[in-house]
Image (tube, rainbow, N blue to C red; front, side):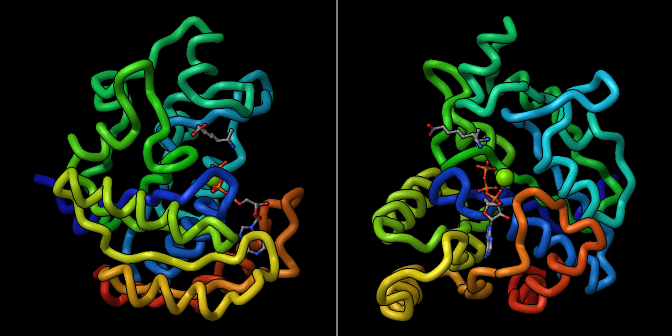
Length: 237
Ligand SMILES: Nc1ncnc2c1ncn2[C@@H]1O[C@H](COP(=O)(O)OP(=O)(O)OP(=O)(O)O)[C@@H](O)[C@H]1O
Ligand SMILES: C[C@H](N)[C@H](N)CCCCCC(=O)O
Ligand SMILES: [Mg+2]
């Protein structure tokens, strides 16, 4: 029998807005609550060979933040080298992505308290000409955490994402305002508007972290732990 308490899908308003950055911090926050937690990145595009095996940095960061031990291919079963839309990367590799394939390849461990799944790109990233990643999330009935990349245009992106998530009968359990790109003009007013217009709890507002270096992987985990302190996961448990 499965003991999994919660399964979350971390969606973003776009690519490169901090889904991995916030996911690793959420994992650390769950770990700090003594919960057995694993982060999965089922589909990754953008990978380099490590001793002959393609590995993606997001998946490695999630693996490192988790307190459960799983092999790389369990964390990231579908990995493609070019950093492009996954369905195109799959096509170039002579493979096809679809909801059924994803359902077969993603193994959700029974003994985890928390399974956190990071998506790829924004909410409606395609798997093929007809299906999107969101179709799989809907099939799996995952609860959604939305990372809003704070920049001009994000109010529209956030509300469109939430509208589609809810139209599928899925729940946005919480959202995070993440300043991945540094300062934003009238930042407070934008966060305030989101707080007033998103019914789900704001789990935290994460300022730009000067210490974040895209070339490093937060080797000792201290950055993720610091960001975790800015997040309130109590409403998720
Ligand atoms: N609050 C922040 N402060 C400083 N840097 C940040 C912050 N959030 C994200 N970043 C940096 O921005 C870059 C993009 O973040 P991240 O890789 O988490 O995006 P993503 O949404 O997961 O992208 P993808 O769609 O490729 O999975 C990374 O270099 C990350 O370290
Ligand atoms: C390569 C990139 N960093 C992400 N992993 C994938 C982004 C997919 C974007 C798809 C789209 O155009 O909406
Ligand atoms: Mg990522």
